[in-house]
Length: 116
Image 1 (cartoon, helix red, strand yellow):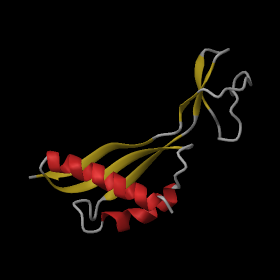
Image 2: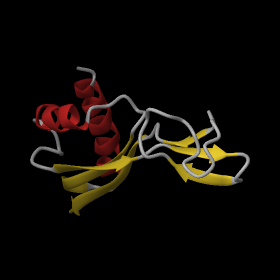
Image 3: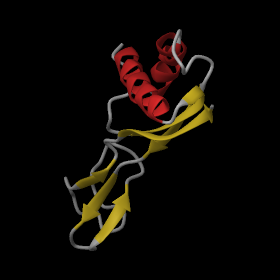
Image 4: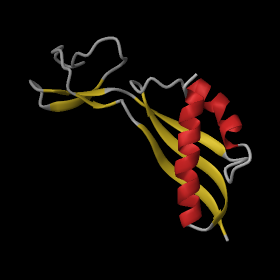
């Protein structure tokens, strides 16, 4: 389960931000996870409590914003959100596309902290 190592990376990033802000504690963390990131959101949530134990994030909540895959369709000239990850074809015109513009994300979006 690589999600635990991802949680440790998230904790490291958030702790650095909290330290720079002179935070007393972290209340919540919001992350963005793309459909192609290879991350199981259930495993990430399960690992979170283990990964934050004994840190400034202990007791905080993890909020996950799931991002669908979006491709650029050259014939349409538009960014198109795909209904799933099985077929990389424009949902409007059916043209195949490998020009993925969204869906690989794994980003910390926001951190809610209690400041001294």
